[in-house]
Amino acid sequence: MIEKYLILAILLFSIGIVGVLSRRNIIIIYMSIELMLNAVNLALLAVASYVGSEDAHVISLMIIALAAAEAALFMALFVTLYRHKRSLDTSIFDLLGDKKATQRSTVQGNTNA
Image 1: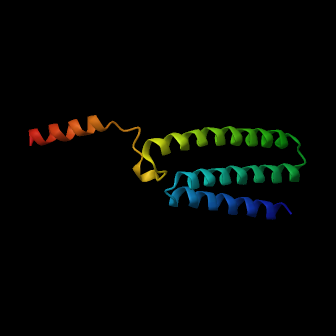
Image 2 (image 1 turned 90 degrees about the horizontal axis):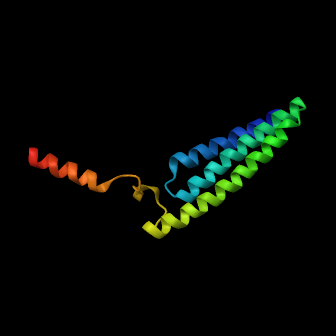
Image 3 (image 1 turned 90 degrees about the vertical axis):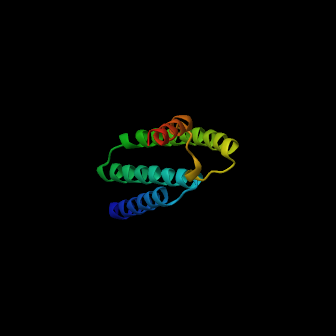
């Protein structure tokens, strides 16, 4: 019976990986990350049930609490990014880059050529 749960967990984790790697919408990426987290949680509980350990249930509750905190953080991030760029497409986000330094280096590069 554990094999069915582990196959389901692998399937869910694989769908999450494909979602993270192939999508550009930040909400879809977040949902894929949550799907991967739930797949790991399912695998943990399946193995714990098979072994007969109750310790994994506590870890599972901690993972769920972490996911709730992550959800609050990501929702605040979504609102901030949408207000700043008016889109949630990941291809337009360059908030960590320094545009002025990039512009200075290209201008200096053109004067030296």
